[in-house]
Image 1 (tube, rainbow, N blue to C red):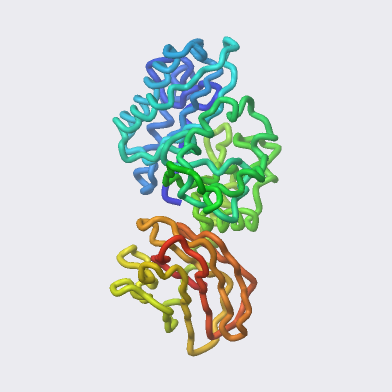
Image 2: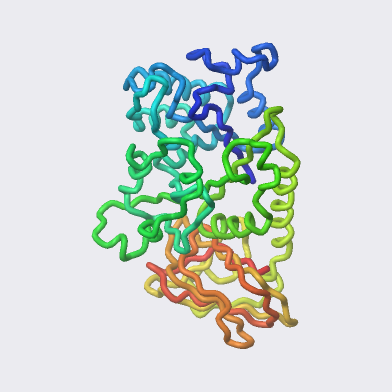
Amino acid sequence: MKGAVLTCKHHDGFCLWPSRFTDHTIAASPFKGGKGDIVYEVSQAFKKYDLKLGIYLSPWDRNHPSYGKGKEYDDYFVNQLTELLTLYGDVFCVWLDGACGEGSNGRIQTYDWERYYEVIRKYQPGACISVCGPDVRWCGNEAGDTREEEWSVVPERLKDKERIKENSQKSDDAAFRQRKIASNDKDLGSRRVLEGETDLAWYPAEVNLSIRPGWFYHKSEDDKIRSLENLISIYDHSVGGNAMMLLNIPPMPNGLFHENDVNRLKELGEYIKKREVCNLVDKAVISSSRSEPGCEIENVRKADGTGYFKTPDGIRSCKIELSWADPVVISMVVIKEEIRLSQRIEKFLIVNGDTNQVIYTGKTVGYRKNAVFPEIKTRNLRIEILESRVAPAVSFLGVY
């Protein structure tokens, strides 16, 4: 993981930094005699360990008296947003959810999203605005449930979906956290869905979930940490399914993470690193049915983004063949499209070339596809791209 998002203010309205615009902050707590600033301490730790800093600021505020009063509350929210964007260095992500329940006065606020975006673009133009924003799309649930077919090119109108008050979270309940992707949300970007659409957007997805049953720490859940197998599966279907994985880790009241959470994170990190140490493509003879001059199949060996394989324009299918002098044991193939040319592949197969047995059937690829299957032993492997919107372009191929 290369970055983390700190929940600077959640729905309770309490600020982990000494905001000048409310007394409901860490400055009113005993922490460091009222002189503490968790956001600052975290930002400094991230710099030390080369992690990017993201901020979460809840628009829903159940404490502030101006919530539900229109512009008055928006002014308050923008002031807090400005503090976070100007006092703590570079911010790579501003995470805004659409939760919209009652405030302390019983009122509900209509958020001025465009104004929020304008402030973010002004002070942190390189930051991705996630979930209720124009840059990164919520996958639609908090349970780690993913789509078999995840398109980054979707109808422009999807950008408004999570901002609509009727679709938002109204309370902190387990049912909302554990809901799955609805059947009518399984397909957001196929040709069938896009037919008749006039406005499209590049709007990649994020899968957010917690390592525990809920988003906050409870001692009773210390033995309910997600299993390593479960996290690997979610990783392979999110990061390995053309999406980003955001994993919540709740701190204990003393500010530390529980050892069970830490150990599981360590196991996950070690597993991901270990299984991709040796890319068998490095030892393979590789060929393709057709390639465009300058975009030869040898380019897929590179992981640095300096080249890619592409068929000639108009050729929307191809075969990529790999062979080894001695048998190799394989259980995962990683395919990455050259997404700077957009997302193209719609259907592909992976075939054991020794037996001609299909070992994996896939649809979309996008930034990354982790094709995981039961172990096979073979000297020959074939990847058949059967359907693509335009000439397929592959930037990287990994066999593990």
